[in-house]
Length: 196
Length: 81
Image (cartoon, rainbow over all chains, first blue to last red; front, side):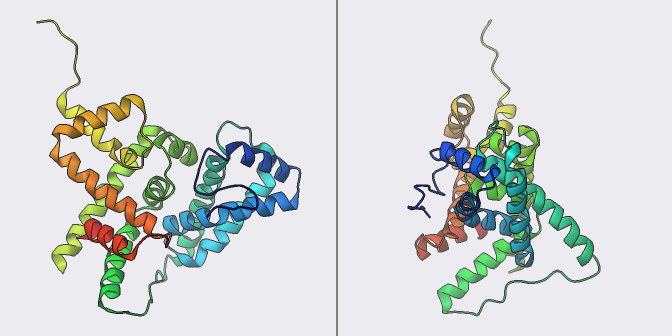
């Protein structure tokens, strides 16, 4: 959603690159209002990305806070090699992987939570809810890395090169991860269709 | 006959297929975009894949709650069914 107060938009990447770099410099100088602005601008996209990558709603806020804490502490290390958004999402990606590692260790002997307790609605809504549920279940079978590539491509609209920067891996690895993510997603959905 | 060395057809398909997600999200540039678009003209398999990937992207955008419910439903059906 466009932020009219700051003249920034969370949807048009690139156009705000200079503003964001200036904003991050102010964050590096420990200006709290600049940090609050950056937080507001990035909160929706980061939340969605972390949700999509973890598929564990309970840890989203924690990872988001961890990410913004690193942004606050490390803002002075931003060197303009990449766009601010790429730099921030790279932090979010690493923080999410870390959190999943911690959480998986805890959940190892427990049961993974089921966060889909939505009330059934009218027929069409129920059907839509079911479709969404099938897709969510299928996405849940992918690895966090595979889900990250999907989120970064389809929701956040990043180019392959930018995703490689965010995930700190070669471009070919991104292409390969996406290829296997697509294949597995299709296989799981096909198996589900046959089971219906 | 001496001619240009053309990439093996199978390898073009493999590379184009791997790049399709970024054709769909509009970030593919120059040579890669040319390669994929040219390949798509004749490859029915990749054309179907593009349709599926477009639906996957559309349903991801639908999570914004800014799109029409019918569009969401259609995209989900295309992805899942």
